[in-house]
Image (cartoon, rainbow, N blue to C red; front, side):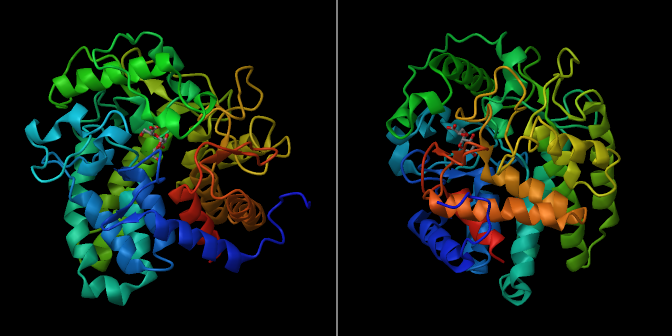
Length: 432
Ligand code: 9WN
């Protein structure tokens, strides 16, 4: 068999197979991330899914975002999950854990989680519009989405700027989208694991235990979710123990704020305010740059300590225009920590770290969304050859292995669940 280097993959086949996965995972108003493991609508998944879906149906991509916006809270937050009420037993913690309809400010007609996920939504909305501007205008898609996105960003730059540093904090590893990343290890060590909710793990019926967070990690995840929920998810719990500033989350906020500028301009509204906000977030991100790693990292907003670990999250500021450390970030990307050892896609965690594990979730394997984001950044920097190499591998490995959740960065061996929606959507996207 030829080495899976991305060359020779048939784009029509990748697109057809990817579209079929998205079709199979569509549920009336939204796409589930994967049929068994993730039976509800997830926030940042929907944006990645919509980016691919717009290539075959901009209308459906718009519906995907509308369904997520239906779960928006009064304070502007877009929830991590909008639950399918018929699937409560199939994922934990589910709607019966959050009981969101009895939390002040949560929607009355949709059951949601109280946490959030990385803010890639305005970026997706702008891309959906660009796919078919006439259809978007007919449906007033931008008019409808813009105020919701402004409120969403207002929540993140307001109540979530817990340290007053100009950066939004995440309050739970699930909010990072990179759940068991080594970035959270130090703070996780001080989180109790004696949650009150019985630790039900429906996820283990769909993925190998060795490819999912451990039972101990789950005890801590539930403990934090309980504490956040029991404080009405109001972000005013002064002793809440997990507050992290993440470079991935804040980069996507700045990139999305720039998309809001484009959306505002298209609607004939002032765009400068969004460009200024994006600039402020980009400047604040500089507090997270770690020269000796040659990339950004996360900061514990309670202790002020910056984590000294290189993860794919820390490469994401490459997406920002005028990035001051572009050369260092490219050198790190191409060095032994990431692509230097001949990786086909970008490892989620420093390949030279002793605890790097190429098969364990966010602790080593390569994910399709992260690799796609890096390819986007390389394109913007004019490094189209390397961007094409990564995109070629996204399409090829996705189609070869039934659209896996993640892969071994070097061998391309598939891990996690299959028929994973954002893998399918972004593989489809690479064929355009
Ligand atoms: C918790 C749905 C989500 C993704 C995350 C990924 C994983 C959930 C889980 O699946 O997280 O949100 O149960 O592990 O880490 O990025 O959004 O695909």
